Image (cartoon, rainbow, N blue to C red; front, top):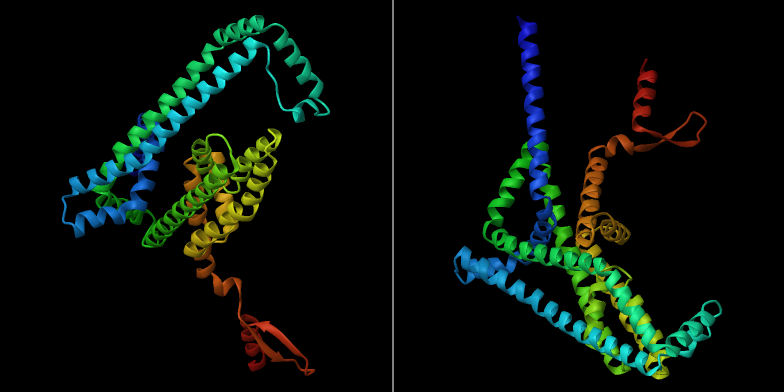
Amino acid sequence: MIENWTKEFIIQRLLAITLLVALFVLCFQVVQFFIVPALWAAILAYVTFPVYKFFHEKVKLSPDFSAAIMTVSISLMIGIPLVIGVLILQQEALSIISNLIYRIKVGYLDVPDSLKELPIIGQQVKDVLWRINKNPEGTLETFRLWVQSHLYYGKIAFDVVFSALAKLGMALMTLFFFYRDGTSLIRQIRQALRNIIGNRIDGYIDSVGTTTRAVVYGIGLTALAQATLAGIGYYFSGAPSPILLTIVTFIIALIPFGTPFVWGGVSIWLLSQGHTAGGIGLALWGVLVISWVDNLIRPIVISGATKIPFIIIFIGVLGGLTAFGFVGLFIGPVVLAIGLAVWREWISQHKNEIFAQQEVMLSETGAVTTVPRSEQEIVGKNESI
C-alpha cells in the first residue's frame, strides 16, 4: 500500500514538474520578444524612480498622472534626439550620394593622395578610379544593377529598424506600468525570492540596485561629457556635421574606451583632406581632454559607489555587451556584482575556517613559531595528559 502510494506520489510530482516546465517554456516563447524592452524599461524606471516619487509624494499627484508625466518626459528625451539624428543622417546621406553621382557623371571621382600612396592597395585604388572616370555611364549602370540585385539587404535593414522601433515603443509603454506599479512589483519579487533563498536575498537586491544605479549614472554621465567635449572639438576643428558626429560619439562612448575610435577617425579624415591644423588640434583635444573624462568619471562614479573593483565593472560591461547585446552594458556589471556579493558573503561566513587565527608559541628550544589555534588546543590537551 505504501509502495503504491509512493509511486503515485512520485508520478504526480513528475507530472506537476513536467507541466510547470512546459508552462515556463510556453511563457518564455510568448514574452521572448518583450524581454529586452522590459529590461530597458526596468533600468530606466529604477534609475529615475526618485523623480517619480517627487511628483507622486511631494507634488501629491496621482500614481497614473505621475507615471504619465515621467513616461512622456522620457519619451521626449529619447525621441527628440533620435528624430534629429535621423533627419541629419538622411540629409548627409543624400548629400553624399548626390555629390558622388555628380562626380561620376563628370568623370572626376577622386580620393585623397594618402590612399593612393598606400603600399598594398594604392595601385588598385588608382586603377579603380581610372576605370570609373573613363566610363561614367557604364559605372552608373553597374551601380544601378548592383542596387537592384541587393534589395534584399535593404529589406533586412528595414526589418531591423522596424523591430528596434517596436521594441522602443514597447519599452516606453512598459515604463508607465513600472512607474505606477513598481513598488508593489518589487515587494512581490522580494518576497518570492525570500521564499526561495531566505532573508539573505535582501542584501543581494540592495547590491543589484546600487550597482544598477551606479553603472547607469557612470556610463551615462561619461558618455554625455565625452560627447559634449567631442562636439566642441568637432565644431572648432571644422569637421563636417558636428551634430551628427556628436550623436555618434555619445552612442560609442557608452562602450568603455570606444570614444577614441570616433574622434581619432575624424582627426585622420581631416588630416587626409589637408586640414592639418584642425586634425592635429582635434587629436590633441581628444588625448588631453576627452579621454581623461573616461578615466575620471567612470571609475569614481561606479567603483566609488559600489565598492567594486573597476576591472570587474569593465569586464562586466564588455562581457555583457557580447552576451546580451546593448542592454548587456548594464546587465553584465549587475550579474558580476551579484556574484561578487555571494563570494564576499561566503568568505565572511567561513572566515574562521579559511583564515585560522594564529598565535605565537614558544617551542621547547626557545624558538618562536606560529601555529593555528586548533593546533594549540591539541598541544595543550597532550601536555595535560
